[in-house]
Each structure stands twice: as C-alpha cells, then as structure tokens.
Length: 105
Image (cartoon, rainbow, N blue to C red; front, side):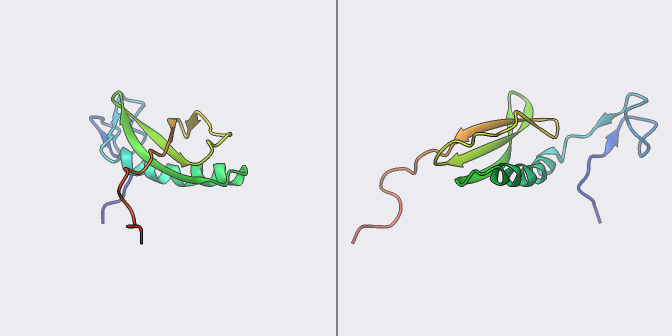
C-alpha cells in the first residue's frame, strides 16, 4: 500500500529527516497534499463568518504550487496570504457562459 506523503530523494539520510544532509523532498504528490490542506482552510474561513460558496484547489502558478480559493458572491474578508507555508490566491468564480443551463419553459 502506497501512502500519500512526500518521499525523500538523493540523500543518504532518506527516511530519517532528508534535509540535514542535503536531501530533497519529492514534489510529485504536492498537489494532492495541497488539496488536503485546502479543506481546513475553507473550514477556517467559514468559521470566521463567511456565508458564500467556497471552492479550493491546488494550482501551479509561475512554477510554484499554491492553494487557489474560488468564491461565489461576496469576497471573503479573512483569508490568510499563507496557509501551512503555501501561498493562497483568491479569485472570483467566473460567470457561467450564456446559453448554458436549463432551457426556459
């Protein structure tokens, strides 16, 4: 069974701490980890009183993985710029394209 956690590569200390001897953390599974970090971020914002719809997902921006927070309605007021060491980008939900949805009766 493979666990979804970072693996250390290129280090003789693999499995110990990976950083003390110049090891590198594999970023292969980082998007999955960011998706997990996004759940408590959304709960944190909702607990601060935000009542709109929020969606959070990992995004690759300028070669860096960030948490993208998408809101529908009013923008949330209390969004941290960093969450667990990762940047948070706040964006409005783009409007649905005209002509999609239910046909009018």
